[in-house]
Amino acid sequence: MTTWFIVTLFIFGALKVLVSSMPTSVVESIISRFELHQKLDEENTTVTVDGESIEGEMKLQVIHEFNEALFLDKHYFPPQGNGTPIVMETKKGKREIRFSIYSYEEHVDVVKQYKKKVVAYRLRSKSLQSRSVAVTEDYA
Image 1: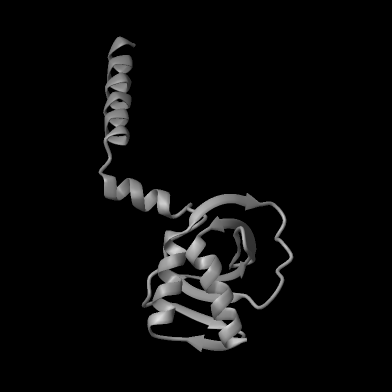
Image 2: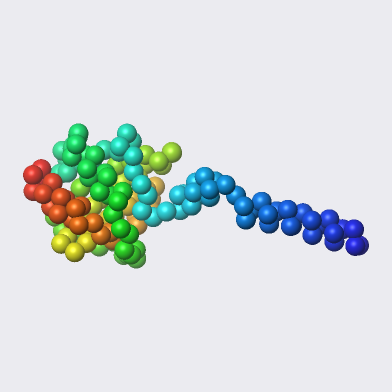
């Protein structure tokens, strides 16, 4: 009985050491799967406003500002979007994700759609808030 206790104690101790000292890259990959506000890359992302595709420098700026935006809070009911949204479609692994971005003076509402799930959250980014209005006015 004591032998089995010592063996299981050793196994659980080794497991604890492995889990508590995992490499940073492994921890980041596990956490990134569950992030609500994920970082987007330019290659797999298309940006459209009112059905018209945005390319070049403007696309890169919108994606960069979205990546740098500050996460505020999660909505439990999707907000009613007013105006023309900026729609960003991206592919993360096998998943296709669609972001609809509605800009207001004090915040930015994001509606994230993937599979059959809809999640809404709020961001803060001064440049994205002001630039989103300019982009919407230019292309709408």
